[in-house]
Length: 78
Image (cartoon, rainbow, N blue to C red; front, side):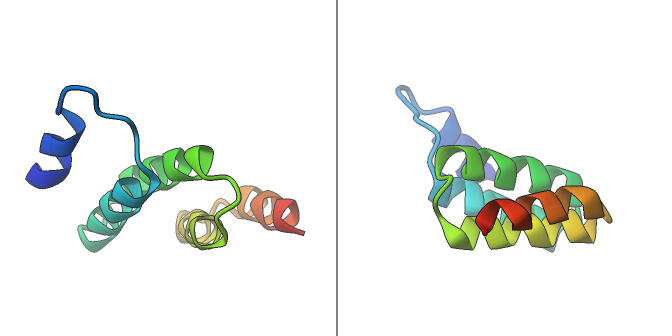
């Protein structure tokens, strides 16, 4: 967590989908799906065509039992 926060606090930091995916994985490991979702959503916003991020977003939504949102994201991939 410290490394991620340090990266975000660097001068000139630009949000990075890879860093956000790592942050999401950290929150998932800590069983904090709401923070995981926030990180994955930001990564998806930055990289909307990345199928791996899309899959992680859908999985996180399912974990949170936000089924309509998960279906909407899955439909957007088709």
